[in-house]
Structure formats: C-alpha cells, structure tokens
Length: 200
Image (cartoon, rainbow, N blue to C red; front, side, top):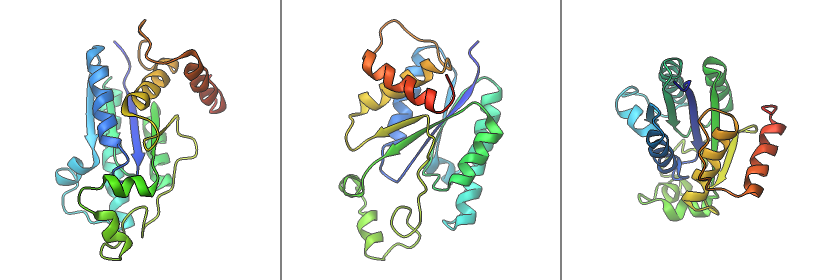
C-alpha cells in the first residue's frame, strides 16, 4: 500500500487552488490511492465555524487543517489541503508536524485574479470596503521553497496538473505510469528543482 502524504496548495483567492486540488484528486483516485481534499472554504463552514479573519483566527484555521491532514497522512491517505494559508510560519509548522509534506504554490498576478473574481471581492478590497483581505490589505507570504510552483495566469490547468503529478512521481510519493503527460525537458526542470531543494 502506498504511504500517505500531504499535498498543500497555497495561493491567493481565485488563484486556482481548489480547481487543481480536485483535478489531482481525481487522477490519484484513478490510480487506486485513498485521497481526501480539505478545502479552506469548506473547513471554515464546518471545522472552523465562528472564526474570523484576524491573524490569530487564520492561524487557528490553518493549524486545524494541518492537524486533520496529519491524521490522514499517518493512516496512509493522501491529504490534499487547499487554503490561502498566507503565513509562512504556520505552513512551516504544518510541514514539521506532518513530515511527508509537498507544497504547491499557485502563483497568479493581481490583474488575473481580479478578472476571475465573480464576487468582485478584490475590487471591494482595493476600494477599502473589505478589511484584512489577503493580497490587498493583509499580507501574503509566498513560499520560498515550494516543491511545485504553478503560474496559473500563464499555464493551463492541464499543464499545472502534469507538473504536480510529475513532481510526486519523481519524489516516489506516487507510482509512475507509462503514459507520461510531460516532456523530457519538463521532467529535467522538475528534477533540477528537487535537487535544489535537496530531495535528490
């Protein structure tokens, strides 16, 4: 049986975390793995109901997701967390807790995020109507050593997904398949990133 691990998607609101998490989940399920997705918005409605958006409350929320991901991981489930998780210290805390922890940074520029935002939250935040909005009036600390960086403004969903799957294969977290969806050049780029991070 494959060992569990946590795949942690971080990035600003509307950067594509949930979309990519669901797509990766489907691929891993097809490969016979046990997978659970903990989406930040869903967790807030259930596990973290009543929390606000202060730094303290955000930290509590991310710690709770990390706690559940740890329980799943040690029971050989692939736990996929998809939450803004803006602060580096709490992401690092979860990494130390879980151990088998892979970060996917969903990078995206503000103009693209505004275009994608159906509720107009970025515009409201920029006009001062929403306080403590991450990436506008509240800080987002991009991960410096993410195992995977996907630029969702420039890459299509399939390209980002293949980069994530290829990285997990290279790390031997998931079994490789014969029908690779990525080129030798892309594979070498992934290997180089993992070398730089000390994995291989």
